[in-house]
Length: 224
Image (cartoon, rainbow, N blue to C red):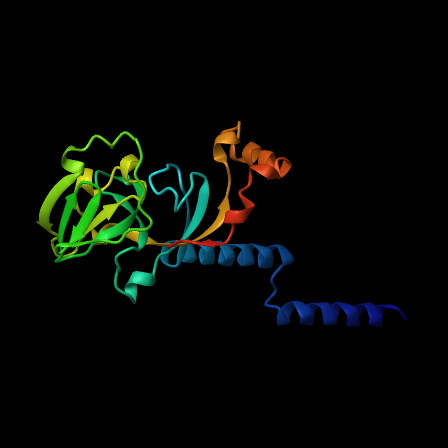
């Protein structure tokens, strides 16, 4: 008497499998994982990418150990503006990423006189710029440059920490096609010099167990 019931159950299971396309749970998880990975790759390639600040060339705006997000599609819809902080391929070694501020735009005449930047003959107001006794505080060409006309498709870039920044004063103009995107937010920040490990896993565990090395006040800071 139990056989017809078993047959009915098997029939219902078969129908359920047929309705789901016969996919196993493992296959469904695998497909979901592949979709997630592809989506992450698309976002990283075309939308947003994370970067870490390794040096003090953009102090005080960006701190060593800041982790920022960069908008990679913005300049497809909006023009580059003076004051934008952008990540780009370093012109002298495109395997490296640099981050600097846009100072001069195409077609403008730029001059540097001492600690003053002039655009088309007018002094640029730069509340973000700082000067200190750094490796590039020797004067010379860095403190006296131009006047020079910025070519079409090129930008003049400078770090906010002027005496600690290797920028367009050293390596020249930046081809706008080398831009990766505009920095817009600090999503994480840590006093990285205090982490005694180079291993990522050990580093993460160290941060979790030493929360005071996190700069909590910088999390969510808008970059401008």
